[in-house]
Image (cartoon, rainbow over the protein chains, first blue to last red):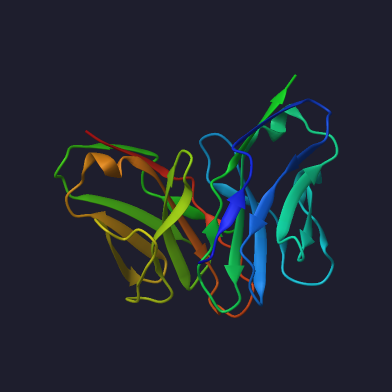
Length: 113
Length: 115
């Protein structure tokens, strides 16, 4: 079955420190990977996506993620977080030819001043 | 900018009531989706539609139905609301063509409480 595992449900980090939010996915021949962010009381917004090509993907707000096929991982990173990054982050996968996105359970990032 | 709107941000209903959640998108997208979001469970797909009058069950369709009479509008129906349907409901839309990449755009969500 298709699955996405976010290894940490909550991540507290001090302001200006680096952060990594971990995501593992079930492998497939052709899979697209996404990170979405949800700020309090809002819908989801796309941060970045991996379709093919370069394994390092850059997104909005200084975030980036690295696709690692051998480890079936797609971890999200930011070198220096801000208070405004406090939000819930969702990793998601979609197989080529499918309409359906499968989401992980989310990671709540709390940035501490 | 793509806009996905949902008819209510907050809704309170009583057990047994029939509930309609409405979603409208303004970008002529073929696909529309309904998810529910619960703490610790992430987003789970209830139903989706890839064309007018077409629908497919997602992972948790029990207790729900949907309607898509017009391309821009996708309704989620709770025939007889129950307390375990208290949740955040998110609507999304995307362009068609499942074989290519198409980002899903989300609405702001409707927080439904069933008493």
